[in-house]
Image 1 (tube, rainbow, N blue to C red):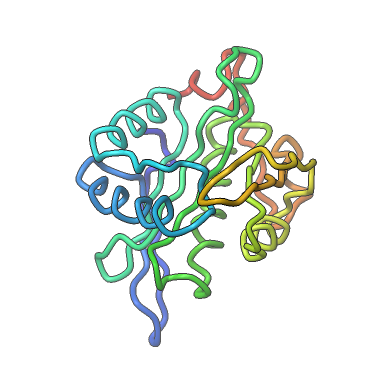
Image 2 (image 1 turned 135 degrees about the horizontal axis):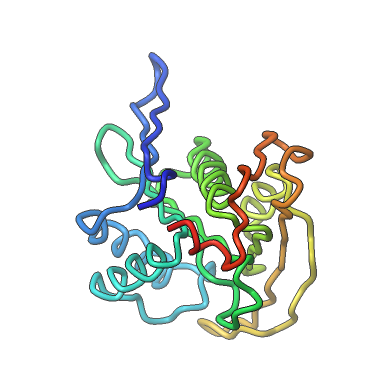
Length: 206
């Protein structure tokens, strides 16, 4: 895995020990369980059939082959969330642009975990040579996700109207975008490392 795989730990006297690190195959059963909750019980994802652990393994391998980050968050050794960057589109000219995804285990929201995961993911994307990050957010009365992205520098890029239909609801998607090519000017001051933007895109340094 690229250098962004090194874990980071966050803790205080009154909170659990939190580690954000690169995902490993042994994490994927829990990843499968977390995501299955959102498929079955929410409108946040447009998927209607939850991927199997084997399918998550294929995704993890594909993301790693492209030199992109797939991270998990642990609290006291328990996987409580995950985040990853995947290609925005498969055509070659999109190779510097990714879509980000962040999911937390039920009951783990509102504690700064989503911000910690997304911050780590964006730093890893910069290190991989990504220039643009796109968030595709289902407009289902979920104000927390757009607010989180705006706090980390994303801007509204557009809306697609009634493009999804799930559980009897027609759903819009909100598109948000973050420009990493001028990282020092955005919240957190994370800059693109020298030499990271090779001619072949993010996978060049993997």
